[in-house]
Image (tube, rainbow, N blue to C red; front, side, top):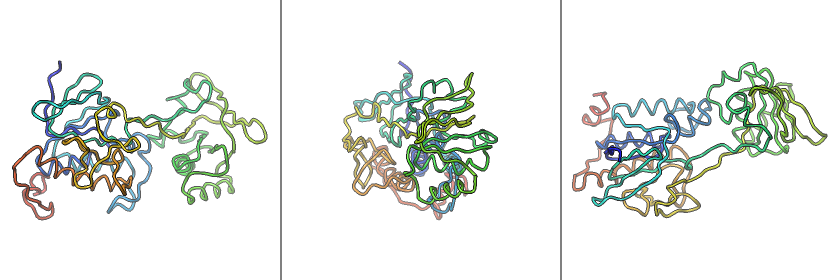
Length: 341
């Protein structure tokens, strides 16, 4: 058996909410270790839309998803959290002393009196469209997320889908692309009306092509896409494409967490609104993974949940210790922790 890593709090998920939890817990002198299935911090923000602007973070009129992650990493640096990436949490058991043992799919062991689930929608993977031979082009010409916009500069870009991601990237990549084509099976979209209007305006000026239909075949060799065949209302149409982005949504899976005896509400962890604790004492859930009446799936809501969770976690880790509420603006003690005193 591997030697356990002992810490105060194990956080499952290193997205924005999990990262901010490190800050709130750190202010209370609690050490954290984060485990994430991805290969870097940031969760869906880093994996699916790192360059997409976010407009509802307080004090930031606009900030990219990756920019938000970078600022959060900078903010928590004084607390030196541990990270374990490319791992799925495979098991959890309660020990005799009341603490928890968390194990990963690679056999690492972590022990802590508090476990915080901040796993967004759970482990997720993009839905692959049913196009014959698509696997041969994945990672070379076909991508399910945009990590660097520059990789699409000068290419014939084909985007497939009718949701916010499809419309957003159609508008964001259009100025870089040699040509831009959006394909959706119908003229109605599930995206923000403003984005749809902007797309149709670009179509009218020749800035992009919109094709109703479904991609049925791909052309190219050695992983290099050359064209896609779209079955439309008037028959098959061949569209030049050297880069393709299919946005068919994500398959969300709660994974092994579903077997931990937690009360679930439509595959989300049910929590109270005082501590955001599950029905199992010592296991908390914050961010999109949790549910309570009136829940809003917003990053800023997750930040609020992290703050209240941290107060409750402190009482578990340090029973009997008096907790004095302090403000970072006026507490010299907190400012020293942050390295700004």
